Length: 121
Image 1 (cartoon, rainbow, N blue to C red):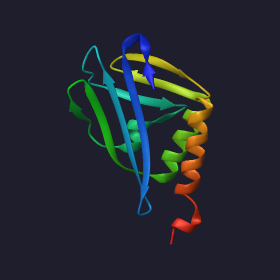
Image 2: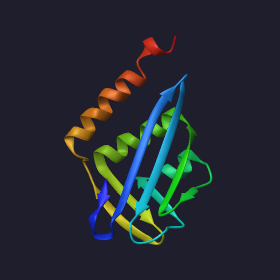
Image 3: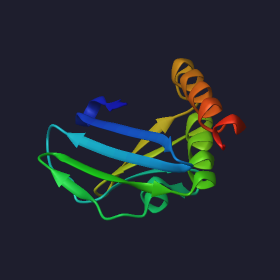
């Protein structure tokens, strides 16, 4: 997702491996390095869900780690349906929901596969 007015790009990914949910969140800005970033959907913060210290690289800041499956699923459901806010330093940028239908369909397909009971064995 790209915030055009500020040249900020945001990426949020999830991957399930061996019953663990690996979560990744990154922002990149062409204009400046940020010290604090977050995505908030309803009352859920992706940074709090990932719960690791930020890593910095050039104009990127990112968080990655294993997160609670239920919290990640709840965050993505709220974010995809209702949207949220991107916090970049002290500024907030509105992400209007629902997110594009292609993204919603891809999410539903992937999570359906990720959490299918046949993979719990």
